[in-house]
Length: 285
Image (cartoon, rainbow, N blue to C red):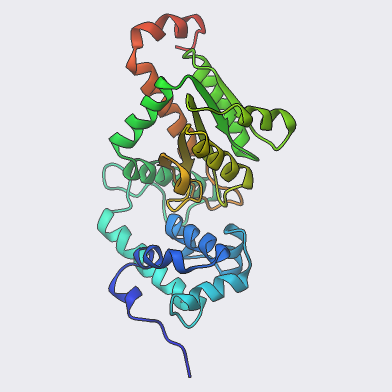
């Protein structure tokens, strides 16, 4: 008997349908689900093999995920993604200010990358609320101790985050590996600590370990993730989302950098008079 797609994906967007069914999927299928929901404009035009590589899983998992949703195979799921992408583009108007397209359809690789970064900033801004950002800024301002956890490429942003906080006289520590010193920093987490986890793609086990330990120690927690259904976000008191779509082999971190800068500016603006002389001394402005 030929398996056909259920009517549910046709009655609502593919993203909405995936989010409704999310808890039913296996761990690997959840990686595919997260990637499609948060990178729809990429997923709509990727092969099953390319999507599997971006979601850190196998092409067979992508096919099984498609069938779990009720589609005959991946091509039918991809068509649903294309339809949602087109509908979204029509309803929001995928153009730059002034109504003209940012780049021509036949764009170069550089233009494609810049265009993705432009869209990432816009999507991140649309998905963040003022209450979320103000809550994160308040948590940073009130914390007696800040621990920033980020591994692999996120270790760079953890280091930059620490640097920019230090300019505002906020001392932060970094956990970037499973080494002894990093684990000692995690071991000192208490109820006066704010634990910030930077996550991109599938959450590293260290991130989940840090978040669960923070909850156990009754520390405050903030997750900054490029997955709206993030594993670390499930354990975090607060979560800030950033978009990381990219036509390249690596995720875009433009929106993450803008988000870090925005949090720092929020802290600066809370008491500009206090920070102004300190910033001037560093000759940053």
